[in-house]
Amino acid sequence: MNFFRNALLATAALALPAAPALADHHGDAPAAETKQVETEHDRLFALFDDADKRELALNPLSRLFRGDDSNAGRLGDYLTEAQFLAGRTDTQLNLALLAQIDRSKLNATDQLAYDVFLYNQQEGLKGSSDEIRALTEVRPIDHFSGFHTFYPTFASGQGAAPFKTLENYEDNLSRHDDYIAIMDRAIGRFREGMKSGVLETRLTIGNVVEQLDTQLAIPIADSQLMGPTRMFPDDFSEEDKARLTAAYEAKTKEIYAAHGRLRDFLRDEYLPVARESIGLSQMKGGAKLYQLLIEQTTTLPLTADYIHNLGLSEVARIKGELEALKEEVGFEGTLNEFFDYVRTDAKFTPKSREALTQSYYDIGKKVDEKIGDLFSLLPETELKIEPYDPAIEKFQAGGSYQSGAPDGSRPGTFYFNAYDLPSRLTTGNVTLYLHEGAPGHHFQISLAQENEALPAFMRFGGTTSFVEGWALYAETLGQEMGFYKDPWNRYGTLQDEQLRAMRLVVDTGIHAKGWTRDQAIDFMLQNSGMTRTEVVAEVDRYIAIPSQAVAYKIGALKIQELRKRAHNALGDKFDIKAFHAQVLNTGGLPLAVLEQKIDRWIASQ
Image (cartoon, rainbow, N blue to C red):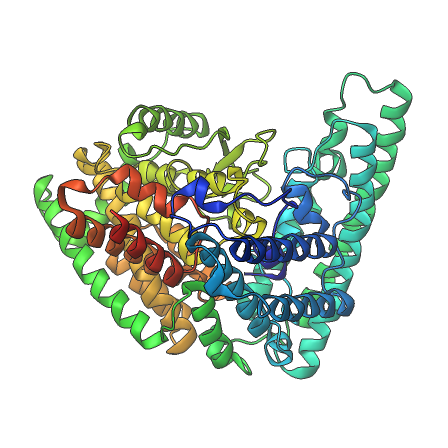
């Protein structure tokens, strides 16, 4: 993940009032109440509260995403030395204070919170060492994640920032200044990498240049950045509307100029020296960084070789299931011919953007009808379904999720990609909705945010392996909801599972085994029914954000393993609703901590 996404995931949350006992909210039995236990609990939650306040002071953007606009005029001092050093000092302080708390005197649920906080701080410290920082901060932007892809939508009036008052509109103008400074600081960081020899790939930077070209080609009047001026509240005076429109136009011109400076620098100075190789292990210092990234994204001590071989095994297994499905639908020909048939037959492609949108609405209604059979814990936050903005859709994934506000004032949003409609196979619509929407990301993220009994870092944080592992596991629940009785929906979910298995092979192949881009593309085309457009976007994503893609399958396999363990141990007493509640009611845990929690729950039953 890039510096921006790391900042959001690492944040703890709103200060909690007198901290309630977690055990009362989500089921782990507390130890007997004694004065000492209360004291340790209070000390622990006082630390969580203090750490959260310090974190939010450094990252005002995180505060906005929680629905708090008390410091909304700032975006943050990302990519500055002061910001980095303050963050590392905070992490060291958190570890020192945590060491003064006697874990053995905490109840079981507080111990869980202790363990997650300890894990987060230790991993944060590893990632902020001078050695690792020299490999990451000098590559501040890629085409998949970066402020230039996030900010225009965020500032458009359609993102997390509110646009209800004059102050909201003024705050946005103020944030523009921070954004311009970040764009210019990114150039400085890239220059540091040019001096040290730590360089981003030519492929990735070429894509960033193309993105910036696309943004700069949009007339200022049509820019997302002017969006707030097209949605003024009714109570604004004509004078204020005119004043703000002029101010937004002037500031948007400044942002365009900043984008132009970044584009020109990357195109004219950086691109000629960017590295031709695509694997992280082929970058100076990259092999060590890749191993650290694997441990951070999976939250397990795994090696690239283990993940690669696991991926090959899963690819072979799923390919066998696709062979069986081919026989079931009566297709005569090879598996690859079967893939080509689905890729190219018009009946498997959406007729229009509107038809694609309606299909997701229809799937959502069917999920709502079935979800109560599997879940007792349901989010209160609304789920909205929207396509990506056409200005950014080309380089986006097939779908994504943006969390809502904890207080329900902003819904969660499932975004789907309508770029190049002939490449958007409708066979995958069900599984994409289950993953990004309900009961995938929307359930997991919303339930954590809504649980005010959790300490803030558990409400608003989360590990990639848990967050993405849960969403991939959620896809499998389509079987129990009856979606996969339709062989073409089942084809779609097998293809989606195959994608996650192939990621284990391709990500490690690229970043640890020297695979070329063409080699990775060919492997995915040969082992799945994905279109070339989809495969190229996926491979370029793995090149840009090493290791992130391996977390999905690792996390899902762990959750499936724990469900099977619970079912085998409890037999007729196994309750799928209770299991799902146990997995979801404490936020996105490191997998080892989740395993310990589920084992305790099994024993308590």
